[in-house]
Image (cartoon, rainbow, N blue to C red; front, side, top):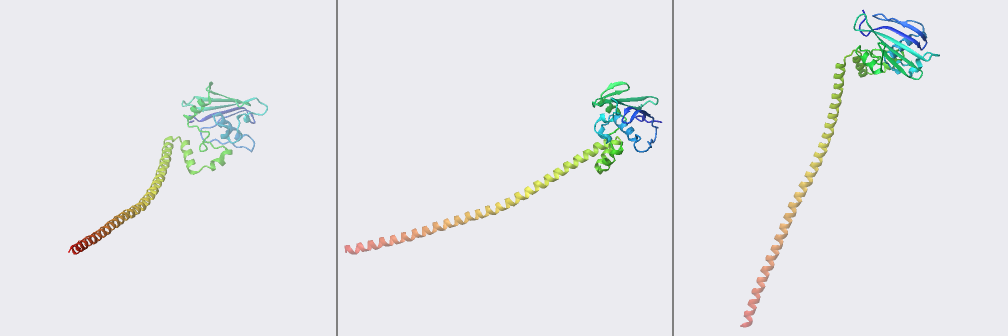
Length: 253
């Protein structure tokens, strides 16, 4: 029993080393067995490229024209997928040439690459996800995935985009938490510096106020000294006047 989206048939024409070949996968585990150079990886490449994948996802060559068989002008890949209905298939056809030009058909209707990608998305087919589709030449890239990337790609492969959204939200919240924590530390440092500066200013203000008190005391003392001097001179003047008056009386007598 084939599940919807299962590959029922792979057909290639003038593709790499194949002039024409058809492969019919079963509903369970499928294995391609053969010596090196017999075209096992070519079938894998055909599946990737036939389902809208980029040549870079294959790991062999970066141009689609490199997959046209030598001596031929173009190549064709036909992928047949199990429909939601038991006895119905969907045919995805891709034809490309040496000019890097590709044309797409879905059930014999001319479509765009975007239409193909949207179509296979409903079957959760992800040829660019190494957790779902791992070509031999991309094993090294898979091994380089860190734990976070591996978790993210696994969630995509399982079509658990709800978990992926929650994870991304957690990452965003964590980033905001870190930013807020750093901001708090920064403002706390500024507050401490301001408190230290304020404490220093308080000491200066106290010294200034103390100086004003001393200046006022000195000013009062200076006034008192001046007043005492004035009183002393005044007493001397009165005494001199009295002596003068006494002298005048003696002269008159």
